[in-house]
Structures are given as C-alpha cells and as structure tokens.
Amino acid sequence: PKPLVQAFRWPEIKTSATVDGVVTVVDCEAVANGTLVGDIDALEAQRQADPNLDHETPIEELFEDQLACADMVLLTKVDMVDEATLNKVQNWLKEQLPKTVKIVPCIGGEISPDVLLGFNAAVEDNLDARPSHHDTEEDHEHDDEINSVHLILEQEFEPKGLVEKLKRLAINDEIYRIKGFVAVPNKPMRLVLQGVGSRFDYFYDRHWQKEELRQTKLVLIGRDLQVEKIQSELVH
Image (cartoon, rainbow, N blue to C red; front, side, top):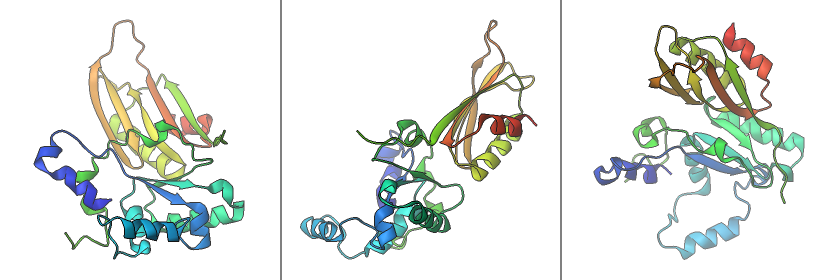
C-alpha cells in the first residue's frame, strides 16, 4: 500500500484528504497452509488479466510490505482452524510486527467499525517508519471476546502521566482503541484524548459547563478487557 499512500503527499490531495490508517487483512487458514492467500491460482490469473497490476513482485514480498505498513492486522478465517494452529499463526505474526500493532481475530468476516475507523494516523506523514521492498523504486458468528470498557472517573489527570499509563496498558493488553474526555487539574477546559497503539493525540476542545461534572470519561475497545483491572492501573 505504500505507493498508494505516497499519493496523499501530492499538493492537490494533501490539503483535502489524509490516510486515517492502514488495516492489513491476513487469511489465517492460508498462512497456516503456507500459501499466504486462499486461492493462489485465482490470484495469479487476476494479476495476469490486469495490465495495471504488478506481475513481477513475488507474493511473499507483497505480504511483507502489507505487514510493514499496517496500523492494525485483521486476522480472518480464524474459525477455519483449530486453536493450536490459530496460536501458531498469531505468534508468527507477532514476530513480524511491532508490539504496538495489534492483531484482531475476525470470525465470519465481521468486525465492529469502531475497531477499524478513527486511527487518525496521517499515514502519509509517517512513511519512513513503514519499510517496503520497493522503497528504492518509483448469519455469521460474532467475536464475543471483543468488548469495550466505559470508565467514569472522578479523578483528574495530568495529560502526559495519563498517556504514559494508557500506553503501557495498550502494549500489555489487547487494547485496540482508546478515546474520551479528561478532567485536568487547574484547567477550565475539557481535554479530548484518543489513541491507537502507542500513538496518542489530545487537545482542549471547550470549557466545562457550570452544571457539568468534571469527570474523566474513557472508552477502551479491545479483547477480553477487564474494567476493574484497567481502572486500578489508571487511578493508582
């Protein structure tokens, strides 16, 4: 995807649009079988039939480039393999990815839009950190384990200290997205905070209203999140 993202640096595009984030879709069953794609013959036929597609680059290199550019990896067809195989594929992917890039298993091709949208990564401004093999060239089941935790805290937080705690949580737990409002000591304005992986943005959006409670409200989206554990780590 890197050459496509580079187009968003063009002056006529840069001022009007940005790349929110890169989600790489990985076929768990195919990776387990060592083929990377489900139907390699169909893929090759498609590449040969379309003159606009790159016919020379090996599938393995394209796959590595997709992983290198990812903000998140969506692992599909996990319901087509047994648990041992799933764990093997996930462990292999973790070795290929930075710790901050989360792997989200997907059952029946379904995933919540809240998980996929709102990275605010501005990918076109961060291409140097996304290596590529071509840098030198010109009724379904639902994944019930994905859940959200809603926190309402009376405690006020200094932004930098809170972000450091949230970064540790995001790295150590399966947290895909964090967003919310923060009450900051001695500040009359509300802080808006959002984060994906180790990347966080925050800014003050408006004054607290007279009748409004100065509370810190956070929503965390991830896998098997425990509200008591998260709240304990934030307030202590």
